[in-house]
Length: 267
Image (cartoon, rainbow, N blue to C red; front, side, top):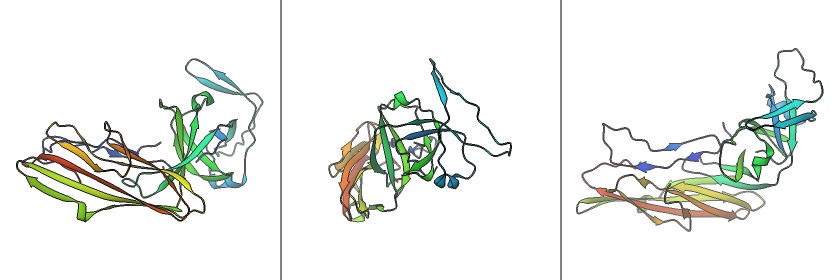
């Protein structure tokens, strides 16, 4: 869905052989609902009508079992026989929420506003399609995924066009050299973020370097501009605070060394 945050899967590199299948591991997976969080049963046929209409929760009794959660509607509810899908709000919860932007320019030139909820396991949320409202306005749809082990549940609230993101290769710092029996490929990128909003924003910038799955291939991070790298996954994160009308630039440079008579796919 358009509101879902892209996911950087680990990028493993090995020697290329036509007889083998190479998986680079760059994929998008489903991952703006302001507290209160609204759980709904069913989806409105025309979501745009939701901008001017907010349903009152019906009375329900929640039964929590060992493996299931049941919501029993305590009073009769009339469903029109017009063949249309009806929406019934069965639960409304207030939850402390921290808002932050996330961007992954390698996969998408967009910045995503996220709501981060702690102690979310106590809320009895269910995995499924989420209809998103922000400041009482319908903003789109996303996927709510509670099948995770993290202490904080992150919900995407969609993209913000007032934050501009760009990733471009620094050609003058990208090279391929052969020294002795080895070849070294160096790649360098300039990551640029501009905040066109009238207020400062917190944003996490995500990128990655390859992870070697062969002892004859070595990957070195040359310049990370203060980013924190997870050496197991190759993922790099920069936690930035950008003032109104400010532009920040990050340089990412890494190299891959391997025998010159072998082939490694890096682009």
